[in-house]
Image (cartoon, rainbow, N blue to C red; front, side, top):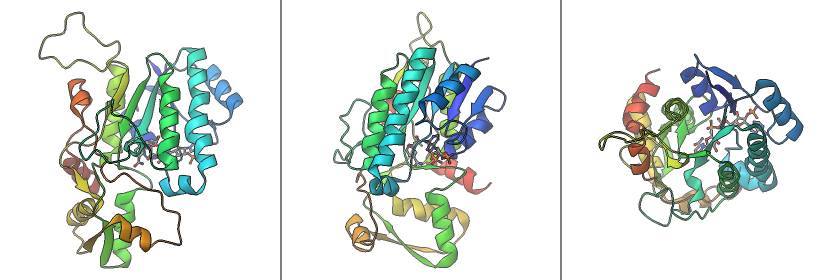
Length: 296
Ligand SMILES: NC(=O)c1ccc[n+]([C@@H]2O[C@H](COP(=O)([O-])OP(=O)(O)OC[C@H]3O[C@@H](n4cnc5c(N)ncnc54)[C@H](OP(=O)(O)O)[C@@H]3O)[C@@H](O)[C@H]2O)c1
């Protein structure tokens, strides 16, 4: 049985992975048990546990927080990943790195392909992209780019439901577009990457799903591309709340939050899913996943 080391083990994705991989040999870590910015601690954990795979989900994910403190964002998202990548190379460990739609500027106006040119607009996007480069320096590494993740932990769905308890009308931006991703579905795709190794049959049948070879894959919820305001409306519809959602522009949102440091976000960051579909790494429609999550 493969041994799987997981960073960000108690974050949204890590919690989902612990459920999906409950019958596997896994080690969940957090910043206490393995601070990814501490080379010695990383080395110690690798030498003791001897993993075959590293699923690297740890990151500073607060996009505005990263803008406030870009040095810290760089330390964790970039340099932390570099330390892990060096250790993976020394120990012969395959890394699955979780990246983000925020590495793009959003100007394309159509779903981004894996080989489209990144142009991050925020400290979060820049430091995650640097992390991608570190991950890709390992032979056989996977980079899974995802977007708008929700699961167990702090996320947009929870934030909307909390706000709805305090007010009956909410303003949400309606000019940033993408697709939500249920952490549990993303965790299942990660399990599939690990389980379907080694990949290619010698002569794959023409119609066969060809298991994912190492490289970059877009892995988000499938279905309609929506704005954050649309997402909020769906959340309230499913939760049976009467909260009114008023769509506002990003510009209006910035004007109303001048006291805070708000990171620029891509206006359109939906990711093209054709490659992941061919590789059998596609997720279900985000609406179906959200309904399941809301019914928990
Ligand atoms: N959330 C999204 O919408 C989204 C979208 C696209 C991509 N992603 C990517 O998907 C991955 C998983 O996201 P998520 O939503 O599950 O994140 P999350 O819930 O914020 O969890 C991230 C975890 O990283 C850990 N961490 C932070 N600094 C660390 C350090 N120095 N050493 C070790 N661990 C550290 C934290 O653990 P401690 O609490 O112990 O510090 C935290 O639990 C991330 O790589 C993120 O960039 C997320």
